[in-house]
Length: 228
Image 1 (spheres, rainbow, N blue to C red):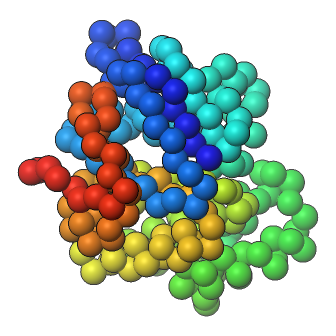
Image 2 (cartoon, one colour):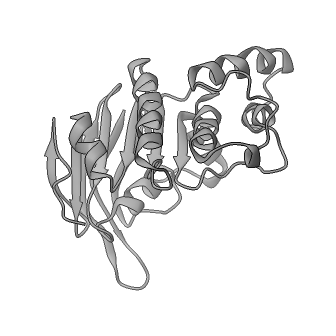
């Protein structure tokens, strides 16, 4: 599903963010990426999304080698990978329904399909009845649910969650984790970068720990393991 083969990334300023990283994530896994600031987590995710070009090695996403993927084909890659960010990134002038529908419209999805699928994804994330609300009328947790719904509306096989609970209080964070766990149980592979020790320790999922651009630990059932 996701494979890194001897991947390295050295930036122009001389910083080596990834150093000969090899890892394989199977379909349907829920994996946490942890590590101190500067460990390489952000570069790891950017390499998956083709937001940076790696210096050496090979990256595969859903059997597609993206290492030398032409920029014209990057949108095709993005259809395979949904992304949720810490800061929600919703369009403030669009309603919840319109924010989610927009992700389908840019792919040319027929409106009849949009009208059918948007309410279904809203129900999945626990936002039935919120379709006509604007982002500023929602709590932070509700906005993150909209972000998750938007990322999943086109049914990508992979979901990347980059610090999705970073702006949320503990109770709301757990509500978001319940949503992600439900999505994972439906078959979506989830890769989540986080600094939240409690979530990692309680969830008891696979943990890949990065340090100085290298994999320091890869535990099938792991813990956070760092003092922040």
